[in-house]
Length: 580
Image (cartoon, rainbow, N blue to C red; front, side, top):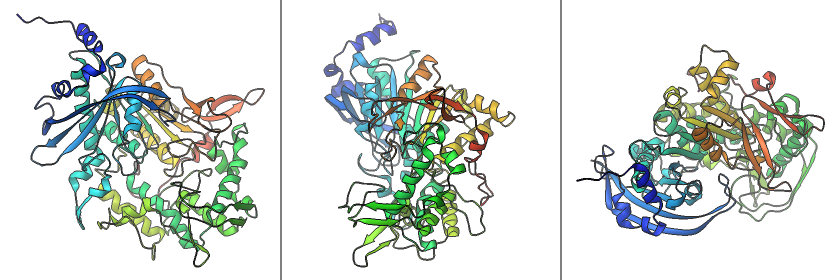
């Protein structure tokens, strides 16, 4: 006679296991999805590796609070039937007593499909089995561009679709089943599934929300790199501006313009704290020409330090005053790409963002500052348009604003079904009960904050065409909420506006929304650097904008300001097709 135990008894018995008892190869093999679970995929049970990690420290993580965790890392490989490929996935599993019936899918950044331990460790800290994938690219450290071409002129389309959306989906479906089997979750007990990612990881998150309405209960998405064709060529726009205007400003000169902008626009939100919370008011009231003649001075730099201003090759000391030519470069960049007929192709960064794409290089032989072509944009011309195994452009000879438009058009048509990811109809996700918290640093210098605004507005207008603006804005907030982070940089706090808070706990607020019905009317932010480190701040829900009033000018009000909102809306009249 077969004895059936109540599900609660099964879960209790599993949670009573020690991590050592759970984290064995045989136990992991027994928890693998069974043959035929995912049509077209065969899991290789012999590839399973189970490894215990103890006292793993999560510190200064952009997306998760500090914690110390113990976990089991279960990895295995699978193949697509008939393809002969091999895809590796890995899942960090929390201690059984700390599992909270959650699964977390994670994404990558740049051209990486995963963020490694930095994100899955945070998932463990909130009681979730957390997964990442290598996309079938060979190993977890291989980027998508490394295997994008089989040979010059021949696209590896299988890898393109894996990077575009398929690999994250497969990792999620397999991982959810692994979690259910490990912890005995069957027949009615809810396993909550979430996604967390920023930049490329944000694009990957939207690829899942748009395509697979029933797989996720919620997604925490930051500064997504969707609208890929426009976004990647946008990185070259600043270089073409410099070449067109024939001026290659010293980085210190451009940074002086940014610093002057921050100083002037800081108090427009009613509070002087070194943070530009109202870049829309900055666009309306700040005249960038007022920076002409201001002095700048930067010490010699020995090189290094990664991305953006104050990075790269060694440079000499820079001293001078801001020139009219530099301001013309800055203003043209801020205006966004226009074709040679004056029609708007795409938009640019907010005025308090650094001019990272306009970074120039110093030629020691000539003593001159020269063009430094953005590698982020160049590769999408050489590898993804020309289909040549190269990530650099030797020059921009003959490249005009119309050339940029044609490159965008080419990428858009070619990769619309893989990388573009800006489908505005989220009806199925809404009907399935899914929730999205979408945030974007307002001073992002890699992905324009207006990109996220445009997508939210596209979803609102497409899904609720018969409602007024205010009614449709209220309706969309039932499942999709956007927050612009004052002073925020690209996927993190901003060293040039250090008193700005970053929403480190956005995933926790998403969980509260999904599991407890606590709506995030304000996003919680924490200052992570500077004199105010540790201070908590609130971030307004779009389309409301922050303003500090009250008797002492420190009380946050989230206000509706139509004139300001209008600055975020662009007529991209260079295109006949809608740019969602």
